[in-house]
Length: 389
Image 1 (cartoon, helix red, strand yellow):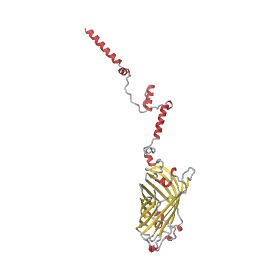
Image 2: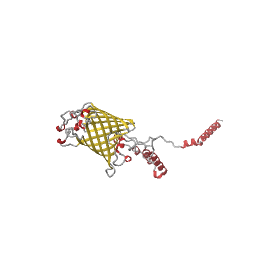
Image 3: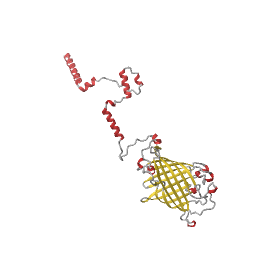
Image 4: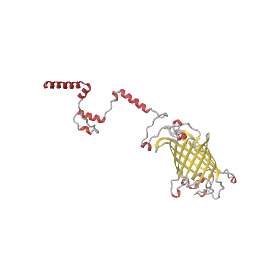
């Protein structure tokens, strides 16, 4: 009995094992070779110690992971090309090409986005991009055109002076503190594409500003001061990033400024200016360092003018809706007794149509040539027909 029982139990166990092995899922697991997990290599040196060729080859493959040969897989090649074209041609919701995000190096000094003639402030003024070119001899604005019926000064310059004795007034002038000031300023492009590759435009400009003692009936309402400023500028377009701003303009200007008067009221000088223009959205910055062309001592009406009006200026412009704000700073770049400069703030605001109100505040030296070494504060209020932007 016991022997029969043991035989039946053995047969039952054998049958159970046979049934388990016959199951496809379990059979696959049982027939799968048993492998212990091998650490993944991180450097090719780890493969050198392997003696078996197959293991050493597998080790190098795990590190370098070679890509499939595109020449043997045309379908994969076409897929990659299509994906690349889709990425480069993708656009944002406003139909502008997606730009690669600038890194820190591009932020300091890299390539700026392409010109957008509809939004670039400097492009609108100087026709920098090819889409903005209007040809030659088209009259455009150079500096703002305005009229201030009221211009008040805190300190009248009744005795203009200069280190040159021939240009020093000895008899006081009869002046009012309130006068009228107006300015006209135009330019035109004389040559488009100075060089063979099409770069460089030659511009000719003229600016005239007058101070009129229109309320001074006792002195027969004279024009106190008029400054004449012709210039020629060679302008190039640039395209770089600097501290988050887009460098758009590089130029050189030959500038003459005088008041057209005889001694002792005569004032004049000549300058060579470097123009650097940068912008970002509705903000534009123009830096103009200059070199004064020296004159003979006997003919120099104002030998120390650069120590007062300065050796360069910086003008910042911001456009908000129909409002234009500008801030001009200039300095002698000297210290001690030659530490002089000026600041001017302009605000042009909408009135009706193209007519704008205009407020101007000036403090420092050189509001005009006759006042180049005279410090005062000036406040003007009126209207402007053309502004910077």
